[in-house]
Image (cartoon, rainbow, N blue to C red):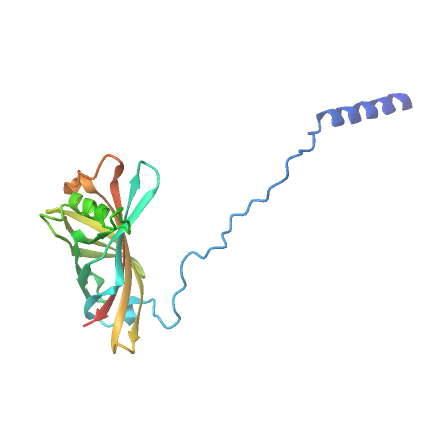
Length: 228
């Protein structure tokens, strides 16, 4: 009996050795899901992130502290980014009833800026894109808001009419309030907003851009407004 038990133990040990997975020679890599990069640039402690703290009334866009950039996919691959240099706008702000707020913005269609120069040092690529946008016949791009809908304490949807290439169609901007504060140097209150949307350029008749770029264009807006 003792021999049988010993033989059985040896057989089990042999099977365990045969079925155990061989140790991997590849180095084990640790997987981390946390990113060391902050999710956003931190707000200044003196800036109020509550729209209710800002005074109601009329504001004017500060063109030196505003940007309208756009991105379009090239060859179905990377996103190419450029901007418009000349923008203006006005804001009527009502923190008590945001639905009464409104915005009106204009962009010079010919102010396309890619930062690229040709061999002669000229901005030929900028002019080529501006021509595709119809800037010669329709030099101004406009946005006029029609409705504002809150989606959170500092976020909302702004629906309005975008006129581009002489054609007007409705678009919706995803907007975020980035803060407000009284600026001592100006003696006025100042507000900051960001917004984005994606349009199909072909819906505005912009079809001469070439076969190498996509139809969808992402528009990114960051703007500060100064109290009138």
